[in-house]
Image 1 (cartoon, rainbow, N blue to C red):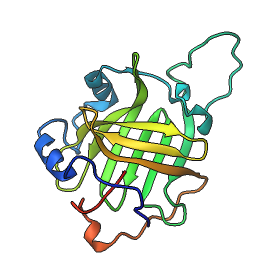
Image 2 (image 1 turned 135 degrees about the vertical axis):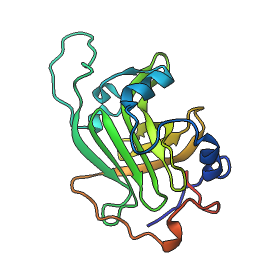
Image 3 (image 1 turned 30 degrees about the vertical axis):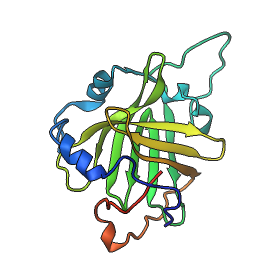
Image 4 (image 1 turned 180 degrees about the vertical axis):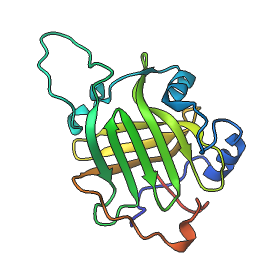
Length: 194
């Protein structure tokens, strides 16, 4: 696993998360769902097939004459990205308009749905969890494409960058999970991610 070019931004993520632990539902599920995250951010549900990186997805093909929006119900078939298909420590799975983003060695997991905020564009809105924090925390996951890979950036509710940008390449098969160093069971202050 390589960690070149990655670092934690703005101090210790764990300290931030512990301070925010009282905000948001528990990881056991409280019935808040994706709509709750969208509402909190002032976003509206949208199809991920309307995203700037839709050409990297498996969206339904349609013939459209003139300007048209993609129906919210239209999403992508499941597509998987990984930092290293041979030994993936970070993966992102997009299915329909939902994402599951997992950084195995850091213990970070984000789940969300694609939404748009007027004049700000789209991203995934949802909740993330980290080791040592018993509550899921609201956040968003921004995605950009450079034509070769998708870059993912995890942000907190204030838009502060917590993890990324991390470029992931498309994987046609489920990658082998990385073997994490035993000291990677929780975020470390010396670990760096971009």
